[in-house]
Image 1: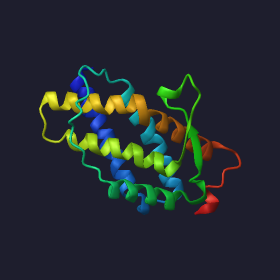
Image 2 (image 1 turned 135 degrees about the vertical axis):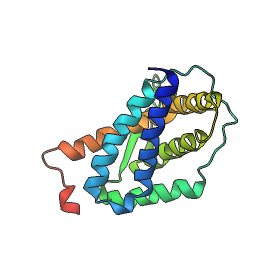
Image 3 (image 1 turned 180 degrees about the vertical axis):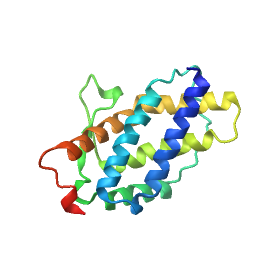
Image 4 (image 1 turned 90 degrees about the vertical axis):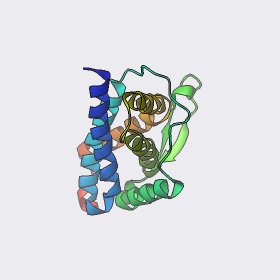
Length: 172
């Protein structure tokens, strides 16, 4: 698969992921958990197979504002209710020291959304070089920051969906 084809496939998943988070209020809790669990899996896999051929450009334009981030965080918090709890995440830079960051699930979603939406916007009407630069920045952020958050969310949602004593349906 060519790098450009991989980026285009990734953009499709990113757009679907962002659209899902932007319409959180239109889904039941169970629908949200099932849908985002699948999309996070795809997003992680499609990003992991990228080969960052170029360096991340520190000057990639940012589109997501603090207000946008907070809108996603609060929508997910409202949707998850009691399931929006704090988890500990060990980021790659702290792996050997064992230090972790405590964050809640809704903040993880907002963090991933921020990078994903910025990437999607950077890929609009851009040259091949622009796509490569946007993909390089997205991949760098994946490696250093949001990849671990995606894995943590997938793990939490896997347990919510498949544990024998799950209470998702009872919360609707």
